[in-house]
Structures are given as C-alpha cells and as structure tokens.
Image (cartoon, rainbow, N blue to C red; front, side, top):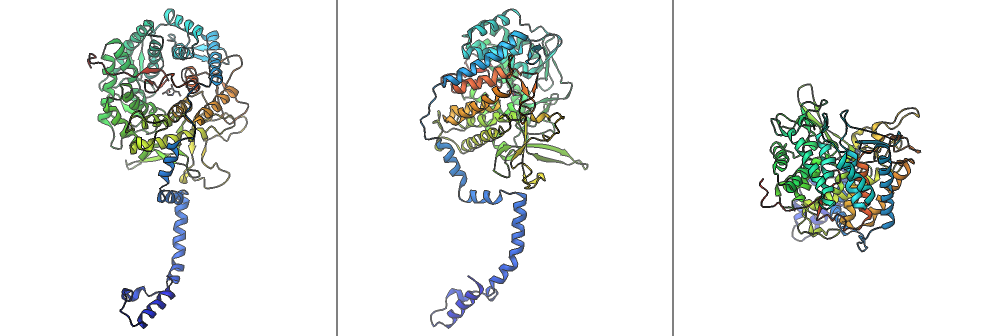
Length: 592
Ligand code: DMJ
C-alpha cells in the first residue's frame, strides 16, 4: 500500500461512525510516504544485489531453485530414469569392436616387448620399472581381460609366460601400491576367473609374502616402496617421511581376498590395521589429507581432494564394505562419514551452468604461523571414478532396501543415498562435458570457473571449465594438464551408471569415448598411445601405453557392451585396477 493510500484509508476510518478499527492504532511513525522511502532505499539495495551477483552469479537462481524445491524436482527426474525398458543384453557389434581393440594393443606388446613391465608403441620397445628387471606388470595386468573376452590363444601364451618366465626375485624397489593393485590384484582375479588355476595363487602368495615387510614400521603404516628380493620396505626418496593416503588404504581388497584363499590371516590383519589407524587419527571434518607420516601414523598438513594420492582411499572404504557382503558396518560408517565430509567441503558448482565438480582444499601457512585453507577448483581426470562410485554407494551403503530398483526409486534410498545418487549423476555428466575438446577426449586436469577467479564474465574466457596454461604458441609444448593418457576413470563410471540405471545414454557416451580413442590414440602399427594435447588435431602422440589401457579402459568398455550377467555387481567388487574379486562372507574358521 502506498503512503498516499494509507493516509486516505486512515482518514476514511476516522470519519466513519463505526467502532474504531485496529488500523487506527497504527502509530504515527508509520504514517509516512512509502514511495519516497523506497526510492531512497533502491540504490543501496540494488548495489548490494549487484555485488552479491558479482561474487556468486548463481546466487539468485540457487535461492529460487531452493525456494521452489528444485532439489526434489531434479531428484525425481534423475531417479525416474528413462521411459524405456531396461535392456541389458549385449551390443555384440560394439563389444566385438572393443575385443579387436584389445587384440590390437596386446598383439603389438607381445610382438615387441613380451614380459616387459611397460610398452612404448611408437618405438616398438618395452622397458622395465627397475634396472634389476621387471615382474611382468603388463602381462599380469592384462590376463583377466583376456579371460573375460574369451581370447583363449592370447591367454594361453600369457599364462605360459607367468608359468615359465615371471620372476619376483628382483633386487630393486617397486611401488607397494602399484604392485599390489596391478600384479597381486591381477594374479588373484586370474586365479578366480580361470577356475582356480593354482599357478596364480602360488604366485600371489609369493608376491604378498615379499610385500608384507613394508608394514614393519613404528606406526604399522606400509612404506611406499618394497624391495622384492630383500623383502624389505623402502621409503619414497621424494617424500622420505610420508606415505600417501590412497597408497596405504588401497591394498586391503587384495590382501583380504588372499587371506580367504590361503587361510593365512596375516595379509588381512596387516591391511586392516591401516584402516584402524586411519579411523583413529581421522581429522574432525572427516576428510583424509593426501599424506601421513609413516612413523607417527598421523595425517600431515597437506591437500585434501578426491584426486591423486587420495582417490582410491574413498573408493576402498565402500568396496571393503561390499567385499564381505555388506557385513562390516565399520567400513560403511567410515564411508558414509567421508561422503558427508566430501559434500560439505569439496563438492561445488561452476559459475555459469552449475557444473557439479570437486575442488581441492590446499593448506597455506601464513607468516604469523596461522594456517588457512584455499579452495582450488581443480579436478584431476582421476576424480572421474567418483561419479560411478557414488552411484554404487547410494544403491548399497545408502539403500534402505536391497536390491534397489534399476534405476532406484527415491523411497528406496536414505537421504544420504539420494544426495550421493544425485551428485554421482551430475559428476558423470561433468566428466563427459570435459570431453568436449577437439579430440573428444578429456584432459588430465581441468579447472572450473568460480566467481573469485578474477576472469570476470568476459566472453573471451571459458564459461565453465578450462585447461590451465593451454594457450601456447605453436612451437611450445602443451602443459601436462592437456594430455590424455588412456585413463579409464570416465568409462569406469559409465559402466556403473549403465548397470545401475539401464539408461542407454551411458552406452552412447562410452561409444563416443571409444571412437575418440580409436581416432586419436591408436597407433597403426599396433598399440595405443598417450596424446599430449586433447585440443590438438591431428593428435601428437607420446611413446607410452599405460598398462591400465588393457586392464581397465578396454575392460570397462567391454563390460558396458556385454550383457549384465558378466561380472554382476552383487557378486563382484572390482579392485582399483579393475581386477574383479568375488564378494564373500567371512568364514567362521578364518581366525582374524
Ligand atoms: C589406475 O592405476 C588405478 O585406477 C589407480 O587407482 C589410479 N588410476 C590409475 C588409472 O588412471
């Protein structure tokens, strides 16, 4: 009501004969010209709104969305899924194309470098990780993919190599984590998928017995490296006092399964003691920083993120819970607390189109000794495992009933489960969006636009995400961030998303990625190579085919186009190198 109307109404009321209305009690100070005051207030209000918008351009849309219950609308949309019947039958043509790609990779390696740890497809050479010789990283990492794909001839030659040539008697240091996830994990899944071929179990026990001394530290945290011949742990010369969270907490699936198979509880106990240490020293906010001190067993001041040195810590919290048939609530609770903390501190949205992504918290020590945490909108390609992991967690640790529908219905999930499902779906979409490059492949590291990045709203700058330092002169080398090194994380998430939603969209996205790999990473003479700039066509290749191309990337692609009876999610957990291990119940007679 304007000031003039208010005055008129009061006058009318005074003139009337009836009982005095309550409005007559309006104190004189309200008898003012509202229009004049509004004009006076307009400028500062508009200015403050402008500043708020500058600092956070989504502030108004966020507020409106939350006011009208946008979250619930989006949730039901996400959870309802597509209006199509879920069809999990194999897409044989595409699946077979993936098998041929695997053969293209394997046969080149076998021709040029059989038995060597690593393969260089441009120079047609292999190399070993140490001067003392290799332990067959590539062979062992690839065996279970051959078994799944039914590549009998390739498999029998690989098995023959393990039986006759593989040696662990190497007087040199190997990375504890990499050796466990690739070689021990590869041997264990080969054992299972081959129908319990004892060759693999014998090798696995031999390898684990050489690794176990790494746990002989004052804290019980395993050292970064291991000398396989001397059976001794060794420090990382680059970080002599530290071990990383992902590395110490991504050994457990393998060690636990080996205890089950061998009946020897030592492996299980050593792995589990790490989880107890981590639980006891967990920081109040529930996130793990990337480094721990291996002597004290305490976290050290270092970054917190979902990317390198931390990624599979979060992955294995969930998978340890799943591995023993969801019976160990210790792991479920650790996982649930971690997901609360991740949502509270690390999940963010980009300024322009609200791309959900993860940020990093980086500590900064000031001159006065105070420490503050800087939020950096940086996301490693490695983080793209997390979308799928969140979906898997939502439908298991976050489920109110088991099994949930495909896709799950809102009433089947807890509040945390619904939150994780939604974030997972959005993160996968973000990872796919980062494939919007000249090659259709995603870079190693992306940065997201945030209001405080100083770039403003200049159309010259990217709206949502960018590759740092990518603007180079033609003769300059692109930054490390620009590369695609055949990583599996996005297709890993697409595999889980397809199995848990049945939405064909995820198969389509996986096929897009596969075609981009074929077009830009395939080496015609054999193998696939890292490319150094995802935004450059024709691509420039680097002479390296990572072992995870055959163990993970092509395996996840193969599984996406296979029918869902191949490695059903309620029967298997895949280790972080995509080696499938069966879910089991802890036997009564396993003394832990
Ligand atoms: C793999 O060796 C494993 O997935 C590991 O956990 C981190 N990522 C690489 C592949 O990108």
